[in-house]
Length: 329
Ligand code: SF4
Image (cartoon, rainbow, N blue to C red; front, side):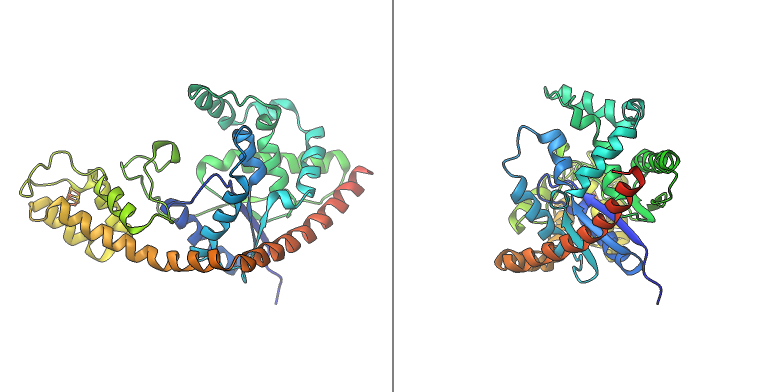
């Protein structure tokens, strides 16, 4: 049987994962059947914006891996590793930094936007490391010479950046080491925040996978509904209601009935929220169970990460040998 082609993705370990992330992990799990999949905690990336607050980094790295595993990522089918355990990423980043024009980094669309967003919160992240994060990301990706990377539309410029870098490296050293990675677009429907805006930690409008049942209840109770509905008999507009959107994800079989009853004014928002609370809790129960298993068996978690690190290091060493040879280092 032909060997599977490699694919890589990662997440910054900046805290507990939420229901929106869970959908991404579910998607990652499906990719494992097609690709030799590498998933990493991007801990060096987390430092680019949280350099003044690294106290929770180690815990966050473990927690994020527990969230991945509890959400169904099968360590038998993929490789899970920490970015900072594979020092070759730093070497490749450094070597790429020698050939990358400064203008390429300055024109990355998210660069100025993020600087401004952090400045609004009173934080200056205009560091050398932050300017270079797209390059570090390119090194992370290209290290595994993958055929593709799963991305959303907003991350397309990063993939294009990688592809340009590949062409420049090959042209400069007259080699052909890296495939130009293609974007792999997911078809997953995006879960909105509890206030119907984009789900985001900065809006505090998310439900964590590790939230206990009473917190789920509180969060569902606080969700944005149709503001025009005061009494149960008021005809509702489910399309503007976050609870209704969530019913589509966690109570799909009842969504049409809820829509009809809401529109006719025959169901109260309290009843609707209660139904959703039960459904989300039922959905999270097996995730909670798996989380407890990994929390109670830290050595199993260590073994999974050791295995993943070993697999990642093997590929990283091969790539760096080729890169050093190409550059005659
Ligand atoms: S009944 Fe349900 S869908 Fe309708 S507004 Fe209330 S919470 Fe939203």
